[in-house]
Length: 385
Ligand SMILES: Cc1cc2nc3c(=O)[nH]c(=O)nc-3n(C[C@H](O)[C@H](O)[C@H](O)COP(=O)(O)OP(=O)(O)OC[C@H]3O[C@@H](n4cnc5c(N)ncnc54)[C@H](O)[C@@H]3O)c2cc1C
Image 1 (spheres, rainbow, N blue to C red):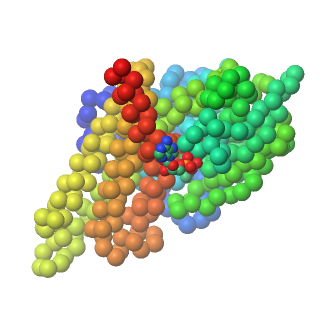
Image 2 (cartoon, helix red, strand yellow; image 1 turned 120 degrees about the horizontal axis):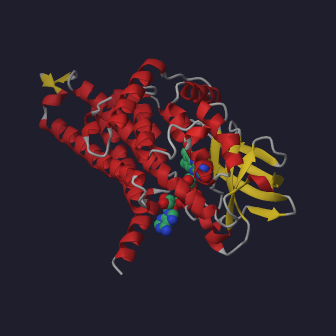
Image 3 (spheres, rainbow, N blue to C red; image 1 turned 45 degrees about the horizontal axis):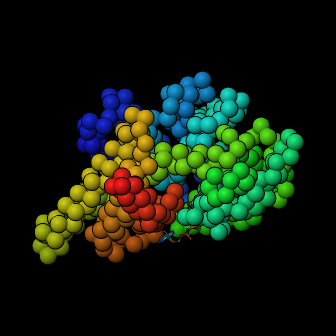
């Protein structure tokens, strides 16, 4: 993978070294296959765990993490590189982080000890269950309810679009506990797969296949020890988790877009037409220039957000800008690559065709582009007061 951006001042030597190592590993070990996605994801989680990459998805060296806190730049470089090589490997890595992020940030010592080492070794698959059929962008409209009794919560409701739904070993799941109205009355729980009352109501097939499901919870009894953080803190916990992983969605988009530019460069320098190479036409050069500029702009925003979070600063606005610019930009870059390939760009199984499908959902999940714009504008207006 092209690694010119690793010279930027956002990175330390350990980041450059990590990016080079994962790039070499991915080139050697990751191969695309048409097999069952569940089996592929399970195998990828194991493979990523055994190779040590999942250590970067969890916090705390005592619990198998690479450091005491999640290093956002490391997570982003891993995602960018994995996405360049293999979309499903990036997905498997990302979900281990997103699904366990709330435990890294807010888990009790017992919860960390019970879940994080297995996540880091690739022995337990994690999922993040926030969205509901009537609460996607409007998370605070969630209607799943967790009712407290002496020693447990009884959860009822539905969660949908849950990545790893069906193959996860546990779900970090959000439900209304009613301490206050709206977003302040939501709590976070760790619900183990196999808990009676938790069922996979539907598997959902999407354009870039990965395990995805709708969950139904019917009188699902979860011990109080599985409450994550304090009651009523669930929304805050979800948003803090997203602050890390939203930036990493931007990084994955960069990986897909960089791969598309790489493929396009190979194509235009070898495709002959009208007595010269496709690359020799100025119309082609304009496209390539636009692709590279869009990519660098998105990469600067992404690694600014990652670096800023690693300084311990709030990044809600910066992460939103990174996700917006990188996912929208990557869609344009990949579309331009498909166009440069002509007919062979839309053939099933072609690399740019795969990238074209893979990028689409990134503009939707972990907050749509429209929601990112709302977040950015809200910050601007608040600061101008
Ligand atoms: C492949 C995939 C994987 C996912 N994985 C997970 C997961 O693991 N865990 C999880 O909890 N969720 C997951 N999601 C859910 C995802 O986060 C939601 O799909 C997303 O937040 C949008 O919610 P929605 O689908 O209900 O769309 P809606 O909220 O119904 O949005 C529809 C449209 O309305 C727009 N819109 C929303 N608000 C406004 C506004 N104020 N003004 C103007 N337009 C607006 C949106 O931008 C969008 O274009 C996943 C989704 C997908 C597609």
